[in-house]
Length: 331
Length: 277
Image 1 (tube, each protein chain N blue to C red):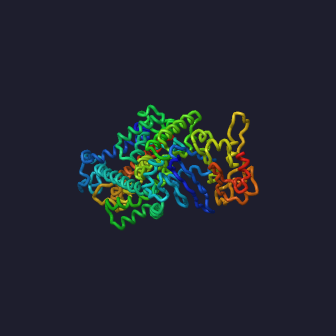
Image 2: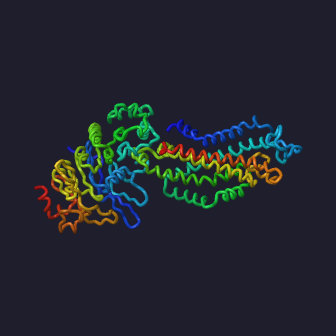
């Protein structure tokens, strides 16, 4: 039996009006996250991964920015919540781990105060209770010497320790959904594995749903149940991890996967060309010019999602009416 | 960086240490003037007017026979005390306004910044004169005039610092964790601008002292017979040829104090600079 989705994102669109036109940052992003499940969001730099996270948290706003579509968290629409309500949702129901742990902490404030500040923003806990909670979560995140860490300043800790602290802070309010925006990019390879393990562990323990953003295929393969591949603000393909890595359908996914480093490979094969400018992006396929499998149908294709048997989603003309690629892809 | 290292860095330079000692000495002599001063600063003794240095009057007397040293000491109270008060009020007002403007942004920010633009468009002395012209001369009015002119400079600078901090990673992560605006400002933004504000205000306190003396010299600030360095300069003006020391002493005081404050401000900026270890 399928559980009810914790987070339901429906046709999320983000536009930024700039001099000279409109930048279409997100184009109809839709996905669902269920309890204890992890959705990986994969894509190259500038494709809208971070914007997705920030707009889910209601923090992507400013002059010229319009966010439309619907975001439902725990069955409640978040798009027109008043600011104060939204604030209380952030951190408690929807937590986020930031990209760079070194800049995510105020150098003048101790780790402990960062921690208790978050806890006390959401619960009537006293300072002592908040401190106890914080110590416990630091231990769970793999920092056994939590008493000392609590009294240290951010610059006294290493990047890996800070990232653990951030994970601990994010998990301490037992959020329904965790957004992790490239949680391991600034860490070295050995730490990466450890921290990912810790995150996976906590997610499983608390049945937290998560959106893990990364451009690192390894991170996604390790943590995610389902993967969404993003390109130019479109989710071009969504499938379970096994299916996607086994049989990528979208030409972009294929190109992305073949650009991986491998033991037998002598050289990396990059995806050719550059992504188009998002300024005044048309309705047609943004991957058209870089695609190795262009066909006649691509000219008239308007990025309608194609749902394939088995529930996979792909946005590519090749899987439309003719289904030519479906047969080839699934064969 | 601890308070101790800052003090060590400051005192490590001879010039800075000397400036600190000068400021300390003048402040103390002002604070302890009732005990230390040899005479009543307002005691008029026309028989001994324009006397040279001698017993009872270490620096001589002015045209009304008042003790110059005593007047200089009591003058330090007014000059320094007023300057600190003006600076404090200015910083207080502009921190509130600048933070509000920078953190809130939007229409409020636009409105406040246009008001600042208007104030900054005029030379500050001219504007202060205009305010005093409306309110009338006097110590309190002069302070009001100076604060009302000067807050705009600081509000603008503080707004700039707040703007850059608002976009920093730790403010974003505090917002993501659902920390409320006032807490973010109090805990993450204000402490980070504090050191810069302290340096700025130390650099500017010399300017404030100069302005206070300037206003009093023009007869718009402190009214006679209250001893004040600028007013003393004005009093001595008529005797420039016969008794230049009447102007020399208060002038020297102003010069020394302003120079000392500026040098300390510079040193403080270097000492608080985290890049210099």
